[in-house]
Length: 130
Image 1 (cartoon, one colour):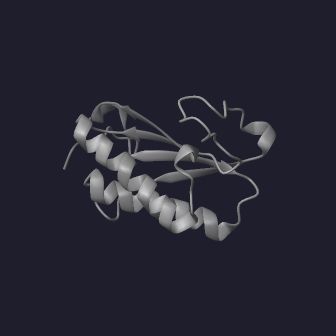
Image 2: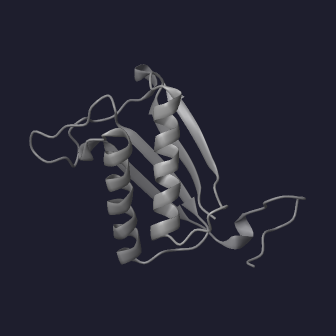
């Protein structure tokens, strides 16, 4: 069950935010094999002053990040192999390019993993795998 914080500019309209959220979920279900109903996201809408970032870091020449920069911070309950993560990154970018016209330099993803015992989904009980 991935849990994602999405960091997005505060000036984006609700429709844009919804498309970003849907694009992420579609990419997770397709590339990470996440069940369709397994959707947990927190949308963090931040002002320009609250989003401090290097516009050029790890970008190709003449392709700096813009005000549309998005950060996805994903905590996944199980590790994925390199090919799966690469496919996810490509799928997410493609979906965001179609849904909101995102420039490829404006996408940043951080994936962290942990163990099932580090989750409690409800009832104050430690999670178990189905």
